[in-house]
Length: 258
Image (tube, rainbow, N blue to C red):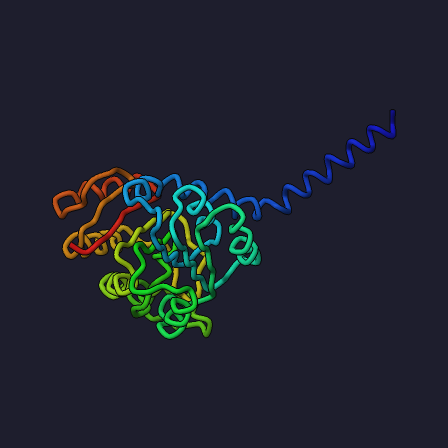
């Protein structure tokens, strides 16, 4: 009897330790499902079957879920930090779906490397859609705005102390160089610091940055908002949208040229 008790206790301890050690691995698979729940309405309307998708800043998991449900023709994911299991997903997905899935380590601003990737993946012309999920706030190319926020600012060599200005005109012009439509999903929390930064190009958007970006977009493009509510975004609706963003923590919208 004592032996069984010891065996049981040992097993429970092992299970607890395993769950704690593997929690981050589980989140790699469960978080994308939660995020897709906020994006699903866009996919339903766009009809992705037979289409091509560029997933910028891919987590390498959402493409598999998208392929299984919506059957696009091809998904190309690019990222600066490709997970160790990316190759397995790309290879083994062939057993489950006809969608071609390919992942590459590439900076979205590296035109030369992108051109090689598109040639290798047999992508001619533009992608039907560009998906940018929880990555838009990393695509900062402007000056360091920490100087303006805190006066004198001595840059660290790795620049992790810096937060760069987001240039919406430059970024979205670049998106439309490679895609017909842009699907944006962002989670944010104004009260939390985003530690997922690469050379300072990070930090959640502030409400002021959201206001500036959405003002530019609905003035120059057609913008369909899906989260926090579904409607066509116009300047008349912008104030209402900002109020909703102040009360929430995510936004999802689709942008296309008029």
